[in-house]
Length: 390
Image 1 (cartoon, rainbow, N blue to C red):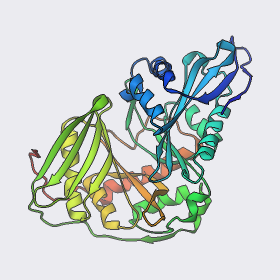
Image 2 (image 1 turned 60 degrees about the vertical axis):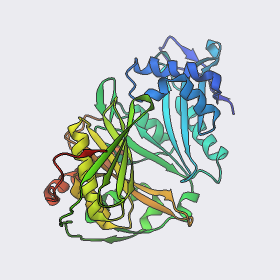
Image 3 (image 1 turned 120 degrees about the vertical axis):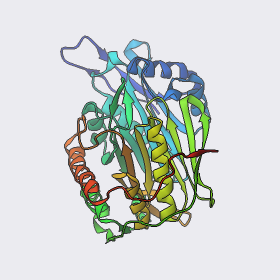
Image 4 (image 1 turned 45 degrees about the horizontal axis):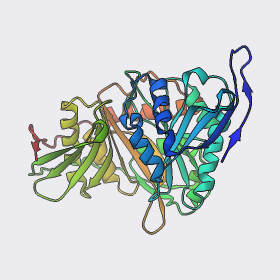
């Protein structure tokens, strides 16, 4: 794959001729240099500053990496974009869309990024139905680039990330192929607080407008569980930790991966089907992680069990996004996911720049967050004062 387009910014001192090509392992050093140039050593996801990690990521085929060269500067590598392949759910997580500072603002990059997205869909036709990203909100430009090639906002993650030593609230965005909708489950059983979030996204995604929503009024989960919660902490590479919270009386547990650079925890894996036990595990996790200074925790649930959604709500999480057709089940159906977030900061007052679409979504989320405070106070289920470390 190769594409190029001439571009000149009137009044600027630089013209350039950008050209796009797939990266190879030998490009890893230049790619890490781009992360360093753009973020001045403050990037909080340290694996992208490790040339061996990037070289292996390129060579093993788990991701697709592209570099942007300037043909007017002896094919110097001036930009990078990559996508991590989820071959279980047929999704690509688009990440690392960045250009060296001296080349920013010269134009032409939107077209190049659009070419990358088309190449993803072409290269993985029949294997990828969704491209998605977590887009920065310090300025409008990253969101606008995504929206120009078809991405729509699906969620807002309050105070999740740290860039240039400041907390930011990225927007989850996604673009869907027609195949993503064909086998999607269109009946959802959800609690009332999720309905407006579903509906605002349905206004941007036409296939969702025929969904059948079962709006379930559920009672708070109230009972006594006589079980201790233990936590096992395992160090991971590049400044990560894995936390596994488990009940002493059963095999139920949840797992989170935490980033010590930006003090967030995500990739929640639930090995617990009972809503009451899940509530205890979630609240215990928040208690431990907030005590350690973590400022953001994220998880997700399905749309088929309102009591599980209630467990997240009562534990202190709030809905932050709605992801249609997100997971692929063993029987070939695509099912939606609800994103849940907790933050130690005021989620209602975000210092962010939003496009018109993402601002409308934020306004709906803000209303949901306010109602959560009023309608779902902290549940009185006891949480151990000291969580045992296994």
